[in-house]
Every structure is written in C-alpha cells, then in structure tokens.
Length: 98
Image (cartoon, rainbow, N blue to C red):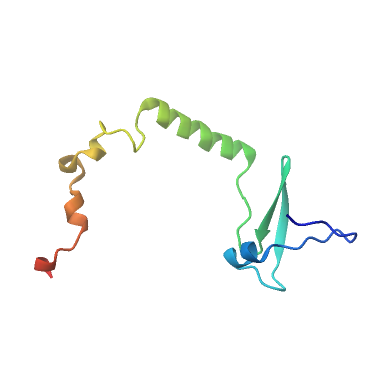
C-alpha cells in the first residue's frame, strides 16, 4: 500500500511499474472510474467508447449468451469438425510431415 504525501504524490510499487513498463519520466494518466481511480501508462490507449456504445456491446453479448450461441456451447456447428472444415489434429505439425 502506498501513502499520499502532503504534495499529493504517490509512490508506485516497483513490481507494478516493471509489469507495466513504467519507468522514471514516463507519462501516466489518472481516470476516475466510479469509486476507484485507474492509473494508465501514457502508452495505453484511453477508453474511446461512450457509455451508450459500451452498453450496446454489453446488450449484444448478453443476447448471444441467452441465445446459446456462445463458444462454450458444444451443440453449435463450430464444435463439429466437419462443419468447420478442420480438426484439432490439423493444428499440429507432425514430425513425419516435415
């Protein structure tokens, strides 16, 4: 946990900085996201979708899940190797084929 100084500065934990490629002098942005604050590296693209666009994406995903056309549905034609035109074995290169 970090503590805010009297100058409203916060020290970023080294492991977090390394994991996200943040170094001394890097630009970062702070975004208010409801009851939390999001820190983004300057190279990360900011969210460009509006609330209405995000809700539309959420609604379409919900409809797909409710209609049973999700990837986890084993009864869909995508799970049938003949229907999709390839089998799992086709993804692997065999030693005898090289």
